[in-house]
Length: 155
Image (cartoon, rainbow, N blue to C red; front, side, top):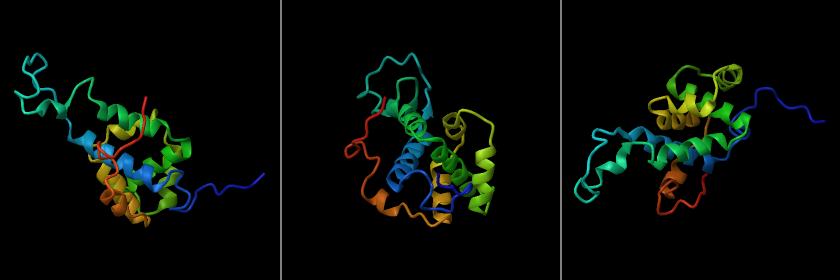
């Protein structure tokens, strides 16, 4: 049986690849952009409201579901890494090992709900990744997360 480092060094052992991390960052940013549904009884069609309703946070908007599925599809270590990255990006920790240890000990569940409840999640994840040497610039330039280019399937 191989002995596993209890607190892996980044970035090779994040538990998720750069593409998946970039996808989650972009979905988190889109989720942050959603606005409360200001008129649930609005009878206008999309053309009348200039498609503003696409940015409203209602039950059938797919952005939140896509982000939740992306997070829940990850294993426990990858979810722990996301929490640690978010905390580092938010400025709670300067050390990867400290952030990862604290994230592993976090008792709150489920992880997707905790992360999606954090305003600016996408920015914090990207900043945390940059602090440990993971640059997501290339993935953003490739259009990852663009609905026209995105080929991921979600349930």
